[in-house]
Length: 239
Image (tube, one colour):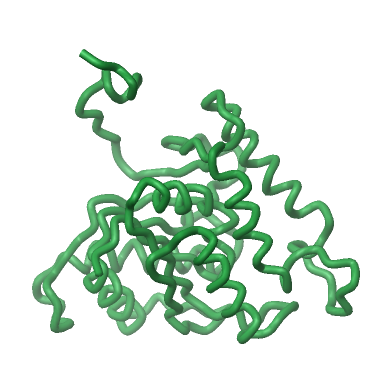
């Protein structure tokens, strides 16, 4: 199966929190979208590997994804090695996405930073014919980075106003990680009552930048090309 857009997140729920609306929007427009989780989240304070797998699959259905896979790298120690890179290359060559999403590289969580580096290297190396995997070489056209550092100006913002409830439902699928006053598990930042509000406020801010209710921000290295400025700035324009 060829995908149009493939997102790599360090842990189950990372993509939903910062690019879930975009993934849902792409799926609703008829594009084939998928998520690959790098780890199973086994070091997480709350929940279990089995629970988080069920939650990830539920979220995938809500978002309308074509595929969801897990690389099985160790949580807390996602490697940036030739062996790990080759595994990601095989996935990229398998699905041949036009666009890859992954974490912005400047992140205090080591797994997020390592995922960014590993995926970025794999996207480049996937286009090298001398790296043999038994598949045709393939290099995606673009990498989009999500979960930008505070105060960092995004390259662009995707309007996800039409996906607000769908995105919320996908995030809410991760019940083991979020606020639950009846839970007896230890508290974490994600399980605090204010966490979801903080995430929603961030995406309201990005929405404000483009005059919309909600937005998700992305960074792209290099300069974006616009083929037709008239259509780009007025998609409803008819000659």
